Length: 529
Image (cartoon, rainbow, N blue to C red; front, side):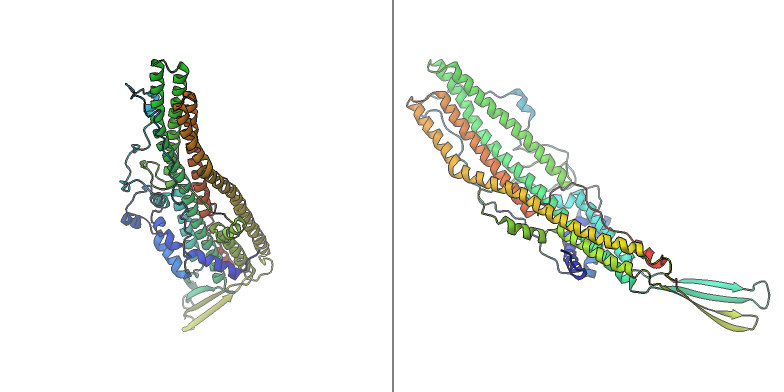
């Protein structure tokens, strides 16, 4: 659908309200220290003042930021694994510990990982929340700062293309070698712009600035989405580590009990080996989970622009339920509300404004020169006026007009491509969302209760002598595995919801669009060529 120039300007005007949201980001500018104080940032960068000027010129009301809150609900409590092997059995004389020496190389993620202190780190005495991570990322992400700078460039170019030319003043002397007849003239010369070219220049760069502001807002969504996805991944890994630590204690008791049974002549070597295998599998899962958590935290630091940021246990909840989503209706709303799509329509508006500007280019400006002086040959004053215009005979700007028509077509196809891309990304996210929802529903209502009941029945059957010790171990392993898989499903649902809230905009460190334009239209205005 082709948007008219007025509609495009209206679409662009909505974007200018974003300037007040980006003020805190622009303060950081291109500073190399992400922890500068507010006063230092203001002294080092004038970006905020520039965008405030842009906002004042446009005079647009801002749209409220899309609520990025998540329907997390209350996290279902997963039954902890704290089964004693048998209620009436004697306490073990000595606890068996089978911890691999290599495990000491992996610091527990429940304690801060030491890193060099950098600048003014936030106080994290109670752990770090999602809001704190987002705040750090929005202030320090380099791609956001890069787009903030490109927005300032667009504002500067817009101001430049509307400025009028400086007048020219000069002196002219004639017949200076013939004393008594020499003539002296002072003059002032000015070029007068016709066909409202400067205002049309402003329209072109105004749409460019609107598109850059929308790209800046889209980048903010990309960073927030990336941070939210990693936050919930780390939160799920923390939850899994808690479960692993609880089950590890049970597995250690199982090894110790198997040894006692063999010493008493009731068990076999197989029972001991099976218990050790289960314990080793738990230890391996623990080490792998710690490594995953450390990697996710490094990703968070990189996206936040503070790779040296110290680790702290995260605070939050994972979603345990979700509702049915109308994906077709959501796709329509997603496209119309996406800042990525709004930027594309602002570029369509720019293309139409550029066509209108190029069509008036052949209309010549008028150069006027006015002079006054004295003629000593007649002992009288003299006045001189000169007017000139270029004749648009051979150059009628047809090439630029044709290019402007082609740019309209290209901008429209780019908007269509972005629309299709949003719908395609939403289709992928809908699959992730629906599969995670189905998994959570099945685990919480059937699989986890069945695993809990199976473990209880296995314990009762073992006490009655109906099953062997290995069956107990298998029931415990099943219960342990299903709990971890349930947490994985919760993390997947949280990630899918984060993408939906962020208009499927991800890639907080991808290369950004610098389409800030240039001041070439002003040169074209006064060269008349």
